[in-house]
Image (cartoon, rainbow, N blue to C red):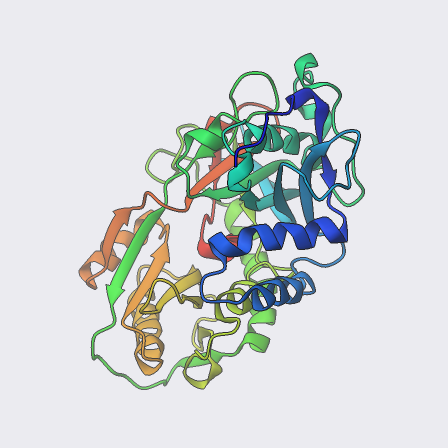
Length: 388
């Protein structure tokens, strides 16, 4: 049964209590639990909470609740944020100069959910509008709208974000309309370009390649982070290479601190599936800067191997994709998907039978809190490794 609407000014955003966190899971389970029982669903989330990407305050659950009763279990809406190490580049005024790379903080946003009985009242949108005020530096935000009451309290372990990202399954306008002020100016869509290969029957030997387990991938992420920094230092900013015109900033999340590693246990929890040999990555022995990692999408069936991170040149790309298709085939998987393959590799992918299309689900959206506007910010390495 629908409930009477509560005035938005009487609500604020709060860090969830343990009891509220469990309530969020109970609410989401009937809609998002899939084949998991309620107990399995709650246990899965609890186990994800102690992984590196979430510990030490990096993951926070938020609830939109009455100001007068912030710990109530009858809260209106909820979401989660993940604090992430990231990099930003401000391109130089003179194109011949090197880019200056700076370490920064970003946030990934997930698990936005309002129970059916409370929908249609603007609660989720208002929660997202208030979320900017707890994850960004307030010096970078507009004046807080008087009609919303007073700003949410600042929270330990949160704040200082230069940008935030999310993946929308409700189209782009909902999050676009949820800005930090009275107008829109919320998260802006970036393209999700998907390339899919049929695995086929081609085989090959493993000479020249090193297969990687989950444990071995940990070292790869730190190697990768160093290469990402070097890449940004030398990345040319010109039409055709960037999604946005004349970017004033380039940003990327980093795969370290458990961000990329999270994709594997999240996808395989409670399933009987395992990759052949327990292998979740591959690296060239002749060129250690050529590598890939992957996870699996178990639903909808049949499973699909999805590449979470890939680095290759035009010369090494074909060999790398061949190895990925090989491990997929050995694991009984028929298709391989890759998100937002860099422009220079798309022609090679097409020649290898890859089918590329722009997706209308899991839309990547970004919000920028630095100087300038979100429309002029290029999201580099918008790949599966940073999905949440």
